[in-house]
Image (cartoon, rainbow, N blue to C red; front, top):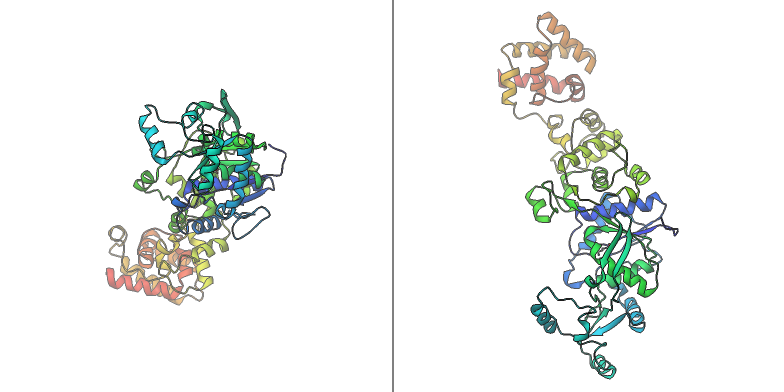
Length: 491
Ligand code: GLU
């Protein structure tokens, strides 16, 4: 653990909507910040204008807000070390490029895209612009100074490259993987400043992490090969590098990296907004993602976001890929729904009413329905589908159920039950049950003989919450009406 106050960042490039892997990265950063009373920064890395997707930053911000991963500094929030869009920091990078040029750690390169392409085609094993080849190229290391000055003054296009010194290997400590080492000849002279004057990801990322006093860089494994370049940049600038932690790959349920295409083929939503739309609870998705790469070292699986922040440590993040499992996610959703206070559950359910075609519902009524359904649904919106009969008269009776449960004596028994219910002084779950049992005794039949057809009449289906509790919620008039309708329809 480093001794500076913990400052972490989520640094997405707005090249598309926020996907599930991105949310996991944001989450691990967020958890570390919360655990150590640190600061969670959102920085939008939008220097690559060609890959920029309009409104992607809005989508990212919205998705983080839906998930409840609030950041302490960033767009719309501000902070002392902004701006938090790299495109607004463009001028700032120039001076750092200059610093590397002055100290001999970077140089100008004038090679045209065609010349580079020709070298790539010539090379048998791929072309690297590095210590072995830079002497054959057109750059400020090979051209006379006057020529370099003249070209720049002329406005000839150029890039600035990092001059990677030859050394045996570049090593760094990764909080997840331990010591990682790369052969330095594998690290090329990375372009730092592009010909359009924009910094590359590598330069802007390192400069900003330094200027924003980032202590831990937590990101996906795909960035591991970039890290030696970053380590060198820290060294060339003379800055203290952050702790690096590269998260394991998210694998498809069938093994192999989970690509967007595989995910779609397997019915796994990719974008965070799809999970929101499908009705996953943000806490459940976070819990699921937290355990997709991290383990608490105990048997506990269900965590609130606060519980996660308390338990989270980087040393319990694994390095091997983890398989995505939709059934497990559904299970987490159920667990989180069950654990909610009734009013929270109700409020979540209510947000789906309109989309489920349920109009104005009395709050008290919805709460009574929710109390019965909370244990029974995998998604909040299922209160309106599984429990449709609480909101409208069933328009059909389950055929198999009728065959099995609607016996010849059902009309007579239900008719008698409806009558007895009408005569009750007070109608409640308890009195409805008592009446039913008395009636069963009087007819010398099992209670099930009345319970099952009554349930069918009230709900159209053969399963659901306790019949008598359901009757109390529906109310006497509705129950009696539905029983008489079933007698008419099913005969
Ligand atoms: N902008 C990079 C991305 O899109 C950030 C990688 C990093 O965290 O350094 O993921």
